[in-house]
Image 1: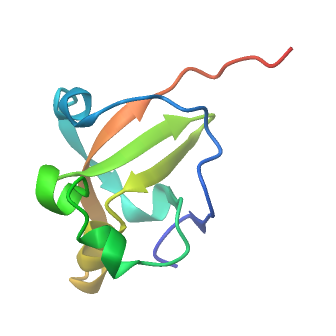
Image 2: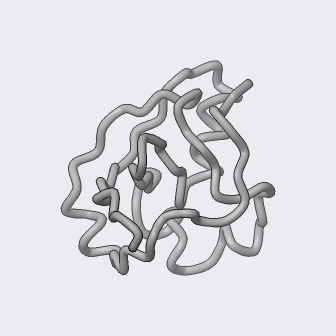
Length: 102
């Protein structure tokens, strides 16, 4: 298994981060087998959009929430790493607080 789990959608709260804020987070290595994807498929149209990490950031975007690491953007980079027999990918990791629900 390449990823911890293949998910659909973003279960974490909206964080509102824009490209400039992501760029302020130092990249780190993340194990592929610890990532939960937020997309089930790789969409080439989305891959080539202007605000994709393909054009705007060299690193994948990962959200850490409730003990899981969600691959928000950069599925293409993670898959490329796996195809190259690598076990890690460089990513910017945003830590979201575990908000208590009322």
